[in-house]
Length: 398
Image (cartoon, rainbow, N blue to C red):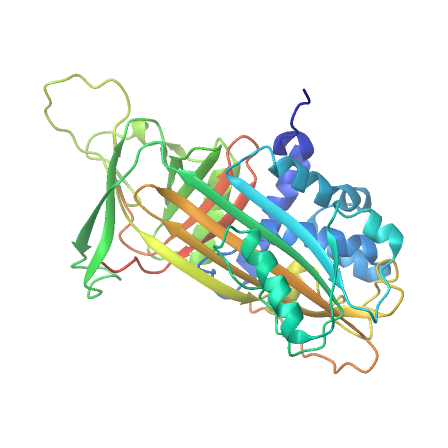
């Protein structure tokens, strides 16, 4: 009987830091934090692109992914194999090519087994096939491939990521009307409450972070920042807390009457002695989705040269000159009383450079109460790998 390769076995601590670093830089570079997005969904695609690129195109992709050429060669397959050891995580990677391009056999040999398919050239047929792949590999959470099939497409690289976890301690689900703050006036919202008996709340001057353990080695972290902090700053702080065990201090160190961001420490009488930490949590249900044009994030994702039909160099990927013509991600997340589920499908389309109109590439412009907008993320607990993250701008309405 063989042993399974876990994520923490497949990826070094430095590689996990690189994947999380891509998420951090990408979110920080955007003019607004997405409702839900996955840097991990992009990371193996950048590695796969880098193995087929040369010169400045390859260097830019490797720098964005935070890895070297040798790591880029092995990471996609290693990550897919390791994900099989965690039932709560599902990850798939695939490449499709049309008849007018010839993929380099050395490049395809480095891809995961059975990852290469064909495009027919008929937009309706190809859309149906790739939509089916997206739905099948996210268990129906995402039903379409986020590409415009009316445009010329010769190659597609795609990843599909989904995560499902059930809370160790479920919440009570009820309705609540917010009488003050940003959510006042929304009407009756879906509120969640629970009392947790573990040391799961950490606080710092700028933010408070609650860790919610789920099954399948998944944690979901909620981060509430000071009201004057921009969402990007709150998300950056949440990633700090998720990746640094020494971040902040335990809420058990707060004295009665002391406050932190969204946190107040009080005391009450009970018939039974206290045997451990007690955290009263009030938060909200949320159901979020997003469609992102990753071309808007080309500098942060290393796609500037790759997306330029005159300068892109993918000599080791295809015999014909090709460039990245589309890069998109669609994602969703649901946070409920019983658990959390999320999915992201990331797709990069490539077209032959000759005779294809040049695209315009824009540069990116520069008791705890979760009763106003906050950040969240899901991570693989043993490795610390961040799977998906986003910003809750408003709760689910009852």
